[in-house]
Image (cartoon, rainbow, N blue to C red; front, side):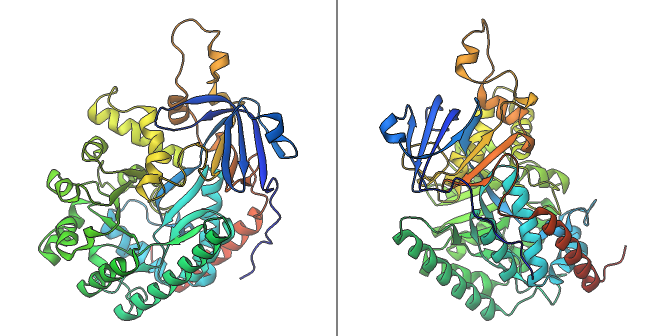
Length: 477
């Protein structure tokens, strides 16, 4: 496994001043400020007017009316599936899994998982994503973890836990105790590293989550072990649930109840549970999770592509359930563009509830403040506020799709209605608008390039890795 040599990061000094931007804060009052943003030791130190004394001797990133937003959070991803884009088309969820994705995942090794993860991470960074929650893979997970670390994304990671299920290849059906033991060892290691980083003033970028795949690929013994580990270590549980109707029927056949009922009876809902999809959550389910640490990652692109349906985001809001957005995976979306997901999420809710019921601001919160809350990071990031981590995305207002300019000073010369900046971002911007991306104040994307990753090498090696996976999987048609 030959990785592209990481380069030194530009503007990675302990102090950085971003000047000339429009700060879309995503704070509770939705403030939009024309001014500067000072970063010190990876945190936002000042917003608005920064004194000459405070700015003396700092590195500078000069903008020209560009939009500065909190970095985008994606609450559910399968970066290990990035190599498989376009290989599972025109299938519903269970056929997609058993005929294509599981055989392909079973053929992964550390090298192929590494290149798949690096390819997906690069796509995420170029689209403005700074924090991910990845559900992992089985074989080759160490390679995937290494790729995410080298990308310098922030995120939750862990191996995808599976031990039993109809159509599950032998290569994915792990021994229950071995799966749980390996997860515990990795979780302890990652959390120790994170605590060590915190002692030096920087939170560890990678944290651990338990990733049981879904009810149909995990035995009762595995679920029990997950519950015990989650309770003992305080680790979040990230899983798929209530994605598709025929999946739900199979779950009831197997367990005699649906996932939320099962999780409740198991005691899993006493901890931090984060489900992907939740398309078919019912009022009775929402009553069970009131007052608990429970969140949903909405994946509108993959839900439509697999024919799963549309989650009711207003019902989730009314129940007090925080929601993040996720592109899911390149094998079922097929894009990892968070802005495309935000636009789609908003349009679907407008169609369902009426155009006045769901705004661009509502959708943008799913990628920022609410998305951060949904994965337990609400106090750390998701808004531009003093003390938060300096995870930022800069959108270029020189792009034609962001005209008319959303800057308050430019709009002050207009008479009549003016566009709202949040609507412009959600309904007009795309990953092509992304200019810069920073995590902990480090400039990971600069003018649309990733200086520390060699994209040409990643593409070349990914092609070779896919060829080897396809040969091992031996799929027909």
